[in-house]
Image (cartoon, rainbow, N blue to C red; front, side):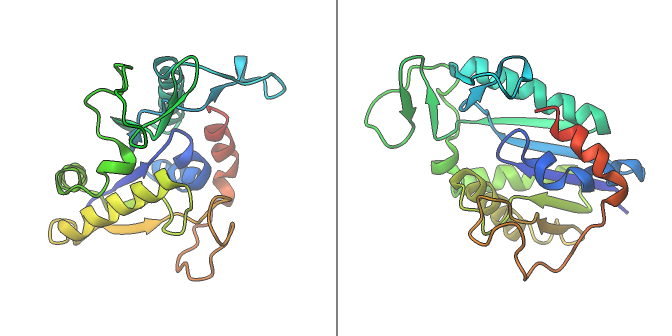
Length: 218
């Protein structure tokens, strides 16, 4: 019987914020944990030195992505998880002068980090990409798969949720022994923190401190 938990997330920190306690609990019980990081985390801002009072600054994709990659690896290391970086291009990034929106402008995107990458808001429903996600999940042989909430209004969160759900449907026979759960919605969801139709609540009382340590990696 599998003892593998797979958490599939759009962004570095999604797993820790939404399911950090569950992941820590699973690992502490002797289970194997895999984090699938779908995007390259190339957008956003950097807070120098982790000082929340400092002024965040935007940076080119390679710099942002490298920071987020280190953060995600640091969090994974705390619970002995393996990270699978898929590096799909996000929907926008800062090119040093302005924000470039992928898929919404009829222009080339010169940043090498974006060239040839699947684009999260364009490719998440492509049969080839769904097959690739299904193949990855089947290869990991999970007992439990956690991913973004179905009611999440963040478009990249929603895309990843749809991608994983579609992969589960396509590979239903191979994944018949796996449980798929969508973690509880956060502030970007239409119903806020608690959605009344969720059918499972995980007690992480003994792992809340570790969850905070995981979140502090980002």
